[in-house]
Image 1 (cartoon, rainbow, N blue to C red):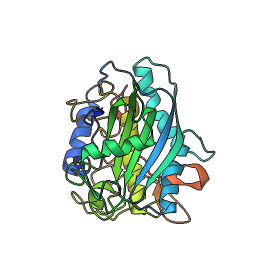
Image 2 (image 1 turned 90 degrees about the vertical axis):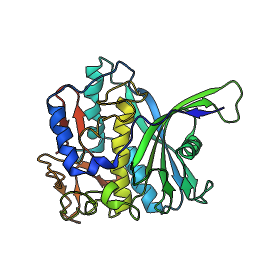
Image 3 (image 1 turned 180 degrees about the vertical axis):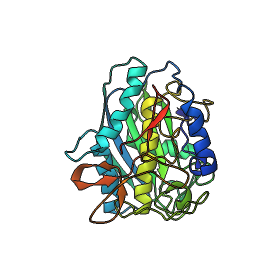
Image 4 (image 1 turned 90 degrees about the horizontal axis):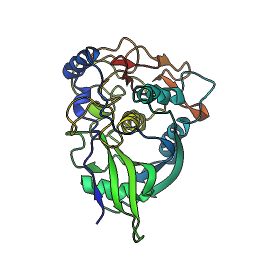
Length: 308
């Protein structure tokens, strides 16, 4: 029987509770970000997108362009590719060669809600398998009208490891990483799509303009990026993290609410501004895309590293 390991990378709602976030960051500044001796993600790994529910073609292009940008440096800097390269320090700290290449793989559409509009964690695993079950990273994205167990109450997304027999193949075992993120625009944008929506907790500062004009999808990009950084640096639950194994602070979640230098409660940091749209961003992608991506922990200094 197929099985799944419970997530070791929750993107907690607490990430956006400002009274907590900078207390955590201050503590991290005084300690070493621990390495637990396990492997990091390596090799040429396709990132497959599984779309559950109704998404527009433009919404799908926003996410697919972000994924494709991970391995495609752009002339305009800083870039999405340079953001991913911030994880190189984890490999250096673990004395592993930097051999990771993430590329856009297949896209799977489940627009008819095959498992309904209310999902359990176990069902997330079943849906994530649709992207493939062997040496892949599957990103499951649920639409704004889909409710998920603990979504908006305890998490904005999660990453986990899927294991078990490959569907339809005898004597064949699978092992793949997967990420789930929900579209929070109509359910909890103030928690999971900040800073593009007024925060549900903490200072009520004006929201930033989303770089691709879609609060839900631009928020999903932030959460996918955060969980991807956790997947890369803690793929099997024994890589880099701080705190308890079942509720760890990982590469991005250890820097909650930080997107640019000078970040403080209610302030995402000093960012770049698109002169044409007025949108805030910190990373350039392919096809002229712009994205806002989270700061990542520097494991050598225990400080949050930003692109700008």
